Length: 182
Image (cartoon, rainbow, N blue to C red; front, top):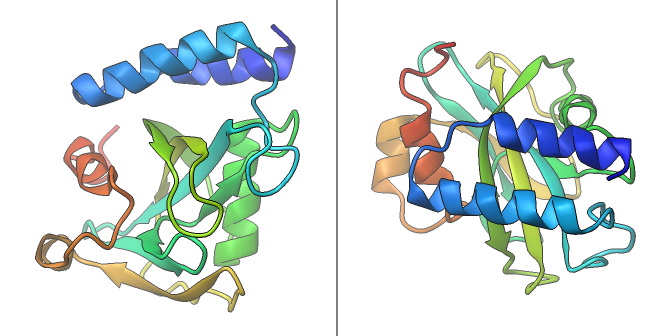
């Protein structure tokens, strides 16, 4: 296992799963990482067909969460992006914080998902490490061609909304109790 893949393996192995779904994603991801070094996206949208993503999830002290209305996915998602070849996923989180939020972030891995994508480029699997970031509701998100808008969501608004989020987002919220503990 090459060192960049071993670093991802270490992050994934250290996560404590919330539930059986995350435990399954963790087991499958660890097996995948042990079977190949081809885990970084090399060509858009889906080469290789399973690859790494780092989500950056800003959470305010009140527990509100910043999400972006992602153009290609057609969903409200945390900011983030694909892990570049041989890039550490935490470096991806920091890079995406600068690019998509216009701020320097300190992030810690909290959650893991493996999701077959929808929207433009549908059908490949994003293995996503969700990084928790202490957010500030005063952040002004720079304009981007990647999303229509960005906004802070309260938990009440999330519960009232339909299926407009990443399919694992509400599970992430359950794991986030209390909002910034640890």
